[in-house]
Length: 346
Image (cartoon, rainbow, N blue to C red; front, top):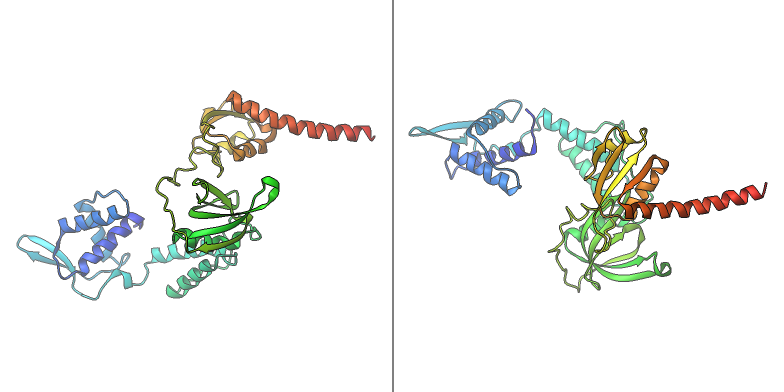
């Protein structure tokens, strides 16, 4: 019996009821407690009598925890509790299924061992291996794209802590604009995002009162500032903040979302449909290898389109087509000049 998150929450709720000798839990009470627990985790709470009976049957089985459950009568009704007052599924050995899930997790987490700022991963893996007598296999069966030499990655742990604990940061940041000088400012950290193997911190710029996107590799110095009250995030839903863009760059307010239509070569098209450019991607014509996306154009989208080279053609919008054409034209001028110089030297 597969143990998904929904089921695990029900099992823990039932375990609490069975251990509670101060109350008598009839089937209706068990349903209510399971639904309350599910709602607290934002799960759909619609538990049936049959579901509870199935859960109890699993918990009593060897595949579950072999719980010592009494069925006690009160008139024609039945209430449930452990006949061993000290029993709880939280202190029982892992089931075979849980052990396998932990082993798989350890193998996955082990890929992050040794990375800067990932000491917590090392500690977590070691604790899991010791606590549950589990050892991940030494052979590598999974790999993630990662850059161990990425500048600024050593600050990731501290940034995550500050973001989680609502601590204000004072940053010295290397700005590529204005001559590449370093600038100092106060940031209220809200959200951390990874894109294209780089890490970014988003937060409220204390001076401009706008959301700034900070690349970790350009943070020169960073310190927590205790004397400035943290301004909580009450306006930005970061779960959907990037819905209309590719990457992490949010365009200016005057740049609207566009319907962009792209035509790909037959060789490239299967890769584009299997790994969409954006979640809004739709296939307009399989025969002609045409897809569309609904996005606000930014630098990351430009880079993505240009990376396909001659395998892509921008059909719409007219404005974005012209924008990409100008970039290609400028590139052509540079390489044409190089070719011309090479020819003259022959």
